[in-house]
Amino acid sequence: MKIVVPVKQVAALDDDFELLGDGSGVDPDFLQLDLNEWDAFSLEAALALREGDGGDGEVVVVTVGDEESEEALLGCLARGADRALRLWSDECRDADPLTVARLLAAAVARESPDLVLCGVQSSDAVNGATGVALAGYLEMPHVAVVKQLDYAAAESAATVKRELEGGLVEVLKVRLPALLTIQTGINEPRYANLRAIKQAREKPLQVSTPEQVGLEAGALAAAAGSRRRQLRPPDRGEGAEMLAGSAAEVATRIVEIVRERMS
Amino acid sequence: MSDVLVIAETRRGELREVSLELIAAALGVKQASGARLLVAILDQEPERFAPSLSADGVDELLLVPTPTEHFEAHVSQRALEELIEAERPGLVLLGHTIDSLGFGPAVAARRGLGFASDVISLSWEDGPVAGRGAYGDKLVAELDFPGKDCTLLMLRPGTFEAAEADPTHPESVPTRSVELALDGVAATEHVSFDEVQESDVDITKAPFLVSIGRAVEDKDEIPRFEALAQRLGATLSVSRPLVDAGWMPSARQVGQSGKTVKPRVYLALGISGAVQHLAGMRTAETIIAVNTDPEAPIFGVAHYGAVADLFEVVDELEQVLG
Image 1 (tube, rainbow over the protein chains, first blue to last red):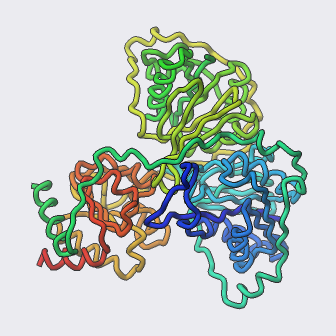
Image 2 (cartoon, one colour):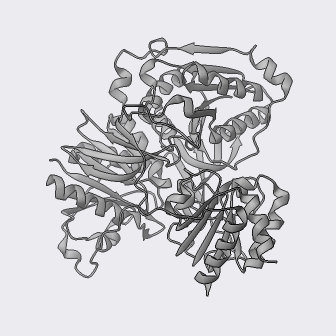
Image 3 (spheres, rainbow over the protein chains, first blue to last red):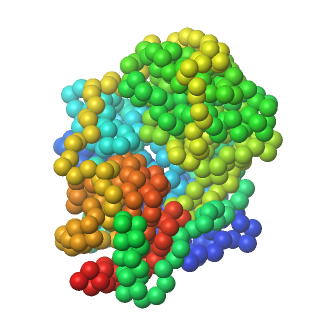
């Protein structure tokens, strides 16, 4: 069984950050990079399926990212992925989910996977859209927001639980090949040991441009779903009344407010 | 300008509230652009929802019967693609919900639409302009959609005030049946629903919640917060990471995938305020938040805030309570 796991190196804002002069983005000096939280769970699901399958399968991680995102890929290889693909061109910087999905689709189609496991969303952009858009380009059956996954090899199908709002869960069956977006909490992601981290650098990591995965010039620009005009601080209305002072003073005020409101 | 098409949402025979919020957002666009407003109902028996969607300003209700009893992503995907082909709307509005996220992005990809999800503001400047959160809602990205004949936007539930329908005058909005070839399109098979687990603790009924999140960092600290909640006369609730980690049962979880709560006081200790969490508690009467990050989105909805270390404040709370 071949499983492709699209992943993302996400950026978190420092407590103090600055915007670029033209308001188009955040000054990169104020970003901390890490593997997207959801992708640790989709990768773990893939690794567990490979192990359950007798270890014959292959787990391929793929990302759209610049050279810095190789750190996330190396982390995935250290945890047990077999090889990695990095797709990049400068037009992918700050790309919207459709652009990313279009590029991923070109590379993933070449792999002919049995299963594509994406995270539900990324913690920085929170579109929740890239996985299902990818399924659209691949014309692959899909299920979004999966919190349990049982694969039945004999039927080449999976029974999955889809997490709905308010704690309700739908159980459904889907035949492979399929794309699933994986919710946090579905499993316990493993950590890589030191030896595996060293060995990760020996595993194949291929870098490709959009042209090299078969996209024509202009295909990504045509796929883009939006243009970012501006990045600005949110309207916060009145905002919170901030309690100043020491921890002791804060605690005293909290107790006062609680007593007043609950009386 | 061409039409605005709203896709209403139903689940297990009930209309979902977000449908009327989408209509309200669409009415704003209609006012600014002069568009017609169409509302489509995709359901096995769509006509039963027509009365509750007959809001002032809706120009036509499209009744689209589906072959499956429950939502099926591929059926909805095909139906929306065919509706777009036939009706040629300039703007399509969906909820940023679990069901609609299961097909909306695929439609946008396949048809080359303008697209944005988790949209929190919508205006019209010769075309749609959408605002959405960025970097955990610490910033807002303003998007437009140049060169797109049709744009699909997924609006965050609870952001737009719901339109009011008048079910007593259903004849006020004309309906049209739209038969689409949807047999054999489903790619998944519904097995069952797992119902929401009953629990001895009902956080939706508690007047005072002390809520903790990721910042707790250690499972062994949880009894301490349980004790603190008890001494304050509160019930302990949590954000998602503590349930994912298996430290607390899901019955205690506040947020989109957990419970929606509206206590008199909500004391959030070390919760940054992810969108999905805020969706479950933003209507609490008084929200007090303690967090080390002054930019944490929780402060955007809190009435009182303190930028402080959670454990230092808890030490002192224990002192104050004696």
